[in-house]
Length: 252
Ligand code: 13P
Image 1 (cartoon, rainbow, N blue to C red):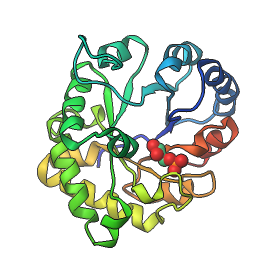
Image 2 (image 1 turned 30 degrees about the vertical axis):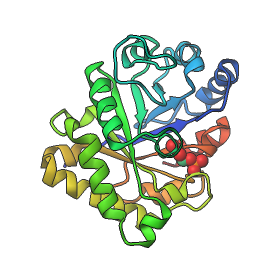
Image 3 (image 1 turned 90 degrees about the vertical axis):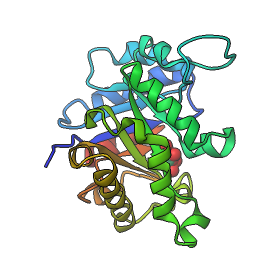
Image 4 (image 1 turned 60 degrees about the horizontal axis):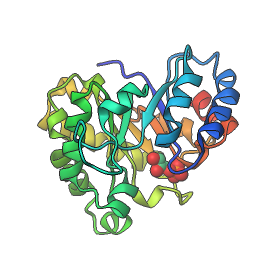
């Protein structure tokens, strides 16, 4: 069985100016100094990336962006390319977050183009998948996940599994305080790994990290991480405060 190093990522969404983000890092790093064997990732908004990259220098924590466009450069007002993100110090890029799908028209087809571009730039995509509440109620969770994986991620199936991360974020659990139970998370993660084993390869499925996201808090992370197919977390609200995110990292 491949060793999958736990990864705990903070998605700060549209919170924190550059100086607020640097202040977080200053408080946060000492709190996690003695915690080994976990990868810590911070995803600030674009204007804070370079300042956070400087603040993280010499620390084990890595930087992520929250989105990227698929072209390298050109007349694409408002967009940011993977190459620019790499130059700003990013190692990871979150793609296909449900807020981008719901509010900004992102589809599996656009996610797919972004995954290709991010991989081509040598960055690691954190690809978000997850069902909406009505889809779960209709019993469509697995078919939704299957389609999102196939249509959004298939170009990544042949790369080294360490170059890709998947985040299972059930939409009904995001920002609602309604975490999936550890059993619900494990069921979805196990399904995802099983599908990857069939459509990618057993090696890919065994090596790829699958994070859980949706109302992760200091007091529920340990239970989620105890599940065999949960390899980490993508944390929104509870990552905005240094003490709270450090408690999640410590308990993971
Ligand atoms: P919350 O942790 O605030 O539910 O957000 C989860 C999320 O969307 C992380 O990407």
